[in-house]
Length: 275
Ligand code: C2E
Ligand code: MG
Ligand code: MG
Ligand code: MG
Image (tube, rainbow, N blue to C red):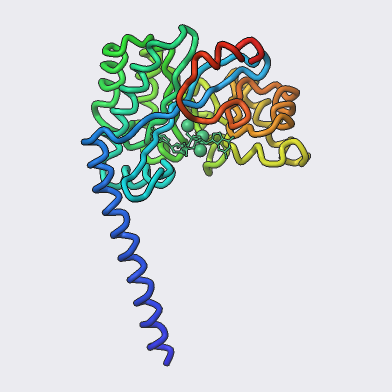
């Protein structure tokens, strides 16, 4: 009896696995097709100074309208792209398009580009960054690469070596989703980051819960002690922004300040004076 039940469950489990594997394979195939057919596009989300309200730059977020499925979140398709190897070609495409766009923006604005750990590990990654800057005409100090802690953990020495070379070019490096990894402080100690992006989970209840506020305050203090600016992700309410201002956060990004999308320069100019 128990054996039959066991077999039945295993059978369900395996069928489930098959299903998932098939879905990943289908998605991988569609990702390669999308690359070929230029079906990806970019959304930009504004980043602003907390104290002045001025725009400091934009983060580029990859978008994909998958035929038959509609908009798929990068949180769902980036892992598949990493698994099937498409991430490298996709990453090169994002970097190139984003730098070309940013080269025509008003001078001070920076462009922040997400980079997968697998991209960093590519032997030609440095060369890709260098040639993209050259080709687009974008000044290196206007490019920022966002890396997550988990993406550099596998081969720390190598990651450190690569990040140093990138910094030597004048490009800056931000640590993304800070605080969610399992050794954030150690990572911070050993890598030369130019910015800390505080994960958006920390914004939850920051205005109402003293404990949440205490943690955010501690990270902001840490950033100040290390002379590394902190950007808060996922700012959705005025109350959250008020806390960040009071606690001395450097920059903020989130739906309150702007949703990811196309940049409307006219709109920005009109509302520009009020931030
Ligand atoms: P991320 O780099 O941490 O990007 C921020 C994510 O938070 C974006 O989700 C953005 O739309 C979302 N977001 C921004 N403001 C708010 C807010 O106020 N509230 C909430 N709830 N969410 C907010 P998105 O675009 O779905 O991207 C998810 C993740 O996918 C990114 O997280 C990044 O890790 C990855 N990703 C996106 N584009 C690329 C890319 O070009 N290359 C790589 N390697 N990864 C990418
Ligand atoms: Mg990011
Ligand atoms: Mg993030
Ligand atoms: Mg995130």
